[in-house]
Amino acid sequence: MHHSPPLGRVVVDLYGKAAPGSVATLVAAAEAGAYASTSITKVLPGRFLLMGTQGPKRSGLVQAPPGLPDSNPDLLSSAAFRLSHRRPGTVSLNLSENEDDDFFRFDPNYRNLSLLITTGPGPVPSLDGENIVVGQVSEGLDVIAAITQVPTFTPNDNARAFNQFAKFIGDERAEKTARKWGRPLQAVVVTNCGLL
Image (cartoon, rainbow, N blue to C red):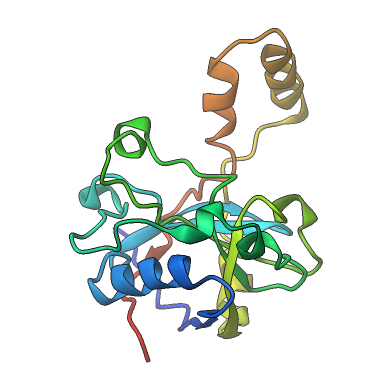
């Protein structure tokens, strides 16, 4: 097995006043070590990285720790959706691109821990109004840029066209297949996570 050297450290400044419920949940998860030894599950250069997908820890996915806040009032607050994804390194609670398995999402104790980090260089307006911006990368944008260089599963034009047609005719498998696009072909692991 080939192990690459660490890419570096990413520091995120959190917006506790703009999204207090979301930040409280993410802080509790980070303090409990939920993100340690987990994988970046999607890399879409020019758009975002996806991390915090829930599933088996042995697969590099997040397991929600006990003791998270019971609810997130931000999900029902229009004010929490006002911040935009204008800059590289914008971190948001992932609602629109969430790939958590229904097994987890239908659990009454489910708490969304999935995060998006915009990669730049430009804004990603397609994420605005559908995800809750919780912070901004203040250190480590070079690490984010390095992650975007990792090879990913990218279909050719014919496969994309076929998938679009399958979606058009209502084939449920098309969406499941499209979720695999952007998956890193080598593991990108968050080795540790905590508060400074």
